Length: 170
Image (cartoon, rainbow, N blue to C red; front, side, top):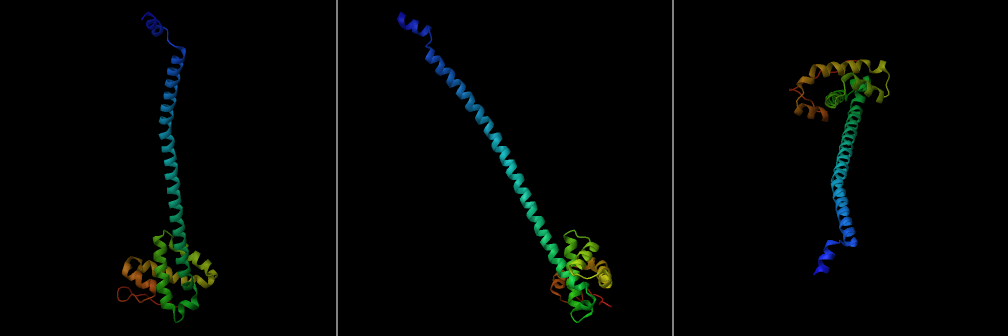
């Protein structure tokens, strides 16, 4: 028994190293696990930010496509010959609808008309009267355009009696 007591009082150096290594490894694993959620959380935040940026970029691209589409609808109405011609009333309605849609996309009225005239490849002397007509028509009627009237304007249908549009006079 004295031998057993003696061996218990003198610790085995291998046992001591095993306990020491176990403690150190446990601490490292614990530390690594504590650091892991922070890294994963940081990556998740980065991924979420990237996803938001992608969504914002996609929304802006859609907005730009809508604007370009509406400018294409507005452009023909800036030609005095087309606006005064047999299809002039339909062009007027569609141009008015395009101006409403452009306003919904935060494009100022004058900017929309200027951009559409550039797209139509017409000089300012040619577009002055149609631009003035459409600008005045928009200012006079924009508060009266309901979603139902807007839908009819977009297809070129006459919105009367809800909305009566003055014809273009060259």
